Image (cartoon, rainbow, N blue to C red; front, side, top):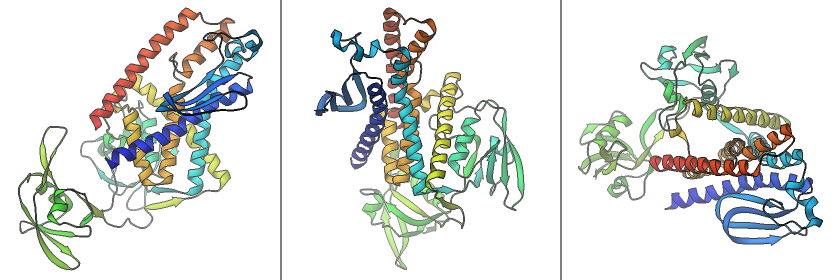
Length: 450
């Protein structure tokens, strides 16, 4: 329940910030273009809080936190008195209409730049992209990537973290191959050619690194417990944080995986576990609980998390920048995220990326909750990513989105006359159906992940 409430609260905060930014873009430019703004609403449905400013605009925080809107005076939907015609949105020149509509997505992109700049000023922690394992018969194995290879460059782009490697792979979807520059375990510079022909992200939630067969280096998993889940079989048996597991049923435990394998095959079967606690040997009896996997298989479950060994020196670095460099990096990273977002939309259309990878509100909520748990830098990174995605999504040429309105106004600009009301109405209906279908599909993906 706590995790649900945490994710829900994080989701409301994150979406509230991003929707406010988006709608404020529309609001600010509308005011600059002398359009009367009647209502600025964050959320839909019943108002929880509302007030007015001196210009008569009503500000609303509403019950359903899944979006927002700016209601402007518009002769197409309102009876507009003659003395207010010059304040109506529909009476403005087409370039003013384009500016008002485009301002929402642009505000999201500017917000991402500012958030990323703040993140870089605080300091970003990176893990050096060193290969920890290569899956047999994978694309990485074909490229002869080796354990210990430090990835320096993908194609013509330098990389310094696993996030940059992941984004680099995704930006090369559809290519035949990409040259990977590495520094091997003997400190020699090597070039590996990673084949990407017919590569698709067609499995739900399969990470690009996993898909090509790259396993990032991670410190060794120890047999010492870092966490014991509340109410779990381990807690009931008396296992504690800091315990080091030595044997199960008198057989020495060699590594964490052997412990996992033994527990999995012992559903509801008593296991005698010997641990070291404060330099003393303690014998405990644990009865693993049952955990049902997606495949339907039921396996034993203990409810513990192991400690990791220390990272080698130099594998984790924190990079902190001054205000000017941070702003430059924020602009660069936002541009890369925008480009990657459009690439992913194209890959979804062509089938390079499976629609199973789409996420809806539930997925965003889980991401928000996780990022808040990891700290301010992770949350800022999450906000920037979702802000860019929100901006790009709103630019899609669906008539119910900003991109659809822009499409109509661009046609009007070229034809010197507006698109007919009948055509617009039909477009809005089709766009609404497509948007509802897309949302339902994303929600189904979210539910399947849960």
